[in-house]
Length: 131
Image 1 (spheres, rainbow, N blue to C red):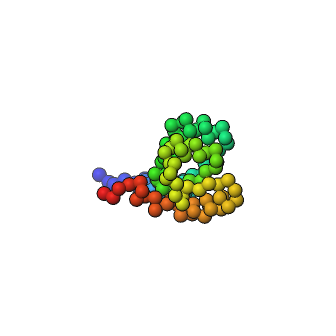
Image 2: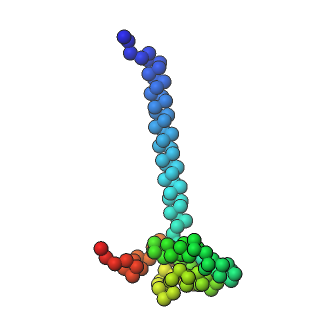
Image 3: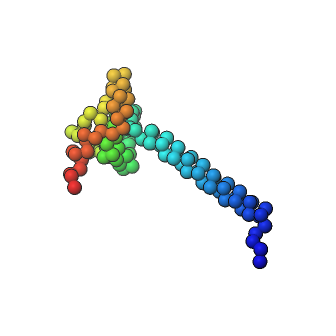
């Protein structure tokens, strides 16, 4: 019995190559999305209205969001009304150089400057005991 016809073989190779190319493009797109998402996760900025701070302090998901950001060593910017949310998350007395009040231009500039570090590594030993 003879092998496959050469034209069928080249078609199969083209289909295989097209499948590999599509998979590579998909992986590149996923990587680009992941990098974009990481840029967005650099810090957490909690600028809330007076009413929103009190409402979110009663919302378990919002409280967990703040706890997670602190536990993941993120920079957290906050204004006066969002302080109640930080209190509810148990962060009172735990503020460090990565928890910044941003109620004026100086505070915003400080937040942006520190957020470039991505994480506050000095916070980690205060949160976790070594193995």
